[in-house]
View: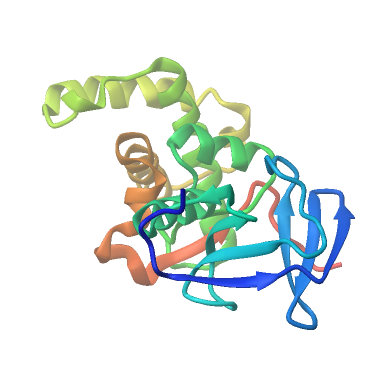
Length: 213
C-alpha cells in the first residue's frame, strides 16, 4: 500500500548498474539515483520507481519499486532524519564522530581565530567524555550546589587529562568549553544547533586541526 502522500513522481527505470553501496538506477535519459544495498527488492530494467519529495534536486524521502517500499519518511520524519545525519542523534554520537576524525557541527565559542577555537573544542570533547563516562544527573544542574560539585569533579579529572594539559588553555577557553559540553550533554547536538540565539555561529570542526600541505 502506498502512503497517503501526493508528493511523488514516477519514472520507468532505463538502466541499472551495481555499485558498492547498492545499485545506480537511471531514467528519463540520464537522471540517476542510488538504491541502497539493504533494499528489499533488487531494481530491474523496466520497473516503475516512485520517488517521494519535492522533485529532483531536492531530498528524496521515499522510494517504491514496482509498488514495493524501499524506504519512506514523512516530511517531519525526513526533517528529523536529516538533522540526525548532520548533527548526530545524541551527545554520544557527536563524540564518536569526533573521535573517528570526522567533521562535526558545532558552535563558535571564542571568536578569536581557528587555533583558539580548536583548543576550546578539543577541551569540550574531553569534558563531554567525562560527563558521559560519569553519567552525571544533569536534571539537577539547576541547583547551584549540585552543579558546583559536579563542575569541581569535572575540573579535577580534566586538568589531569594529558590532551588538555598540553593545550595550556585560558580560563575563558575553559569556561566556553565547559558551557558547550554541558549543552551537548544536556540537550543533545540537534537541539544545540537549533538554538536561534546561536544560528549565526554554526561551524564545522574536527579532531585533527587542518594544516596547509
